[in-house]
Length: 286
Length: 61
Length: 259
Image (cartoon, rainbow over all chains, first blue to last red; front, side, top):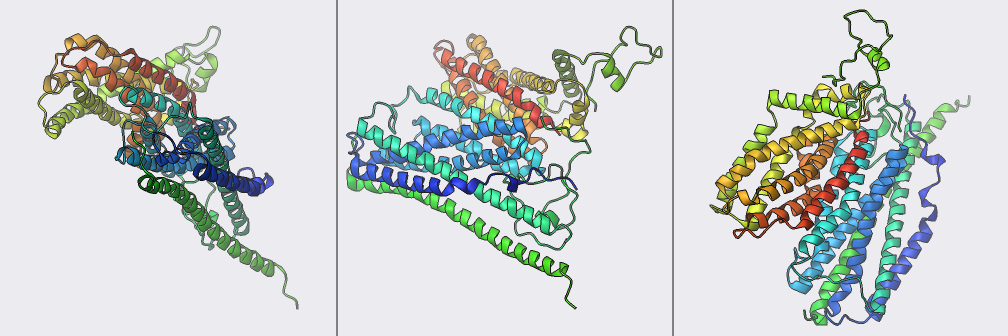
């Protein structure tokens, strides 16, 4: 039977710094919300509605950085062949997608409040985010469509790198195409009065720490599931009647064997059709 | 463009923050569901390990 | 089908049975592996030869484009268009016809073992990317030779000839971008399930900057009062896109071929 990848249990666990991180995230969020609603004055132009700025823009910035970070982590995966990098990349992209949805919804609410329309094509941030969202929404279907876990990880990394480079280019192109049509609807982040700027940066910091905390949270959960799967494999090596709890998913499995092990029905805990791998000797990873 | 008065703008601002909060809470809920599933599996595996241990120890005469 | 390595003459001093060419690993050991340009040339020739014999991509793409123009006529209820509308119709049609070509790009290789054959050859793997992208570029250019006159005939109101040099430049720049991204995405999706759906789904958002640049650049070319050439800004955007994604696709393509 093929040797599984480097045992996860021998590595440092992700959960070690998690508690402090979540406490920090909660505290910063609380501070940011207090500043937004009790300290910073209303904007002269947009009034109370402007306060959406402090949740919408940090969501946008962190989401974009998360996508680019996903691409960078994918580069490490392709260079080292260590599938843990792929897991990190997957979680970063997955979280950034959630934050992107948040950006789109809060931006839409802001547009509705400012202009009366739920969607405006003249706001380059919103438009860029729509494109980026549509793009990264295909990331998980792509993973799900490839059954061999090693190939899935590789192809997903190629996709993550390409899309990570795409994000800034896309912003540039969309910004250029809307520049001369309308003034910015949803507000600038430069030339803010100091109270606004401070509140903004605190919100941004809170969002960053929240993202990292959620990232660590999900990594810990995935690592735990991987360890449980290893445990199950160790315990059920000679039993073919153990029914697995979970089915196939699009998430990366760093503990999955590098070449599909010859499976008996029901073992290895996966509802998995026979692997269609061609009969080539596997070249060593770069 | 004129700033909306509080009573008109208020609902929008709170809706935006509530959306953010909901996203985080839904995320935590999904993680919680996965955690319960993992826990169920750990319980099953523990039972299995205990059974195997009992099978291996020779029965006392 | 095996990848074509150029026939190797025996090196000086190497004894061989007269009349019998070296084959297999012996040939590789005797001569240096062909340079990347030679490999690209060989692969490209093979691609074009296969396409000329089977005619499975380009005629379909061209027919699709012309049919789409007809569909647009009925859908928009317009007999002639100009400016932004004309620009948009042309680019949408070209883009979706290109998606058809992208879907078919690696299908033959995947189904008939061409990937395996290529991997066994002692050549630079990036050559496959360059050759396929060049082939797709050629298909797109041939598509446009059919589609653009058809467009001018069926739907376009202002005359085409004064805008032609600018139009050709814009089309070329955009086609390079479409070819690069199309080849990368085609390689990524050819061995997945639901490849025909996933391919365009991945490629279209990635190609939005090309659409932005292309449509904005051709819009003044199709204006009723011929306003002048394409703004340099959009040509610059297209060029930057081609450069960035050309480099990235060239760098990551190898990882799609490992097995």
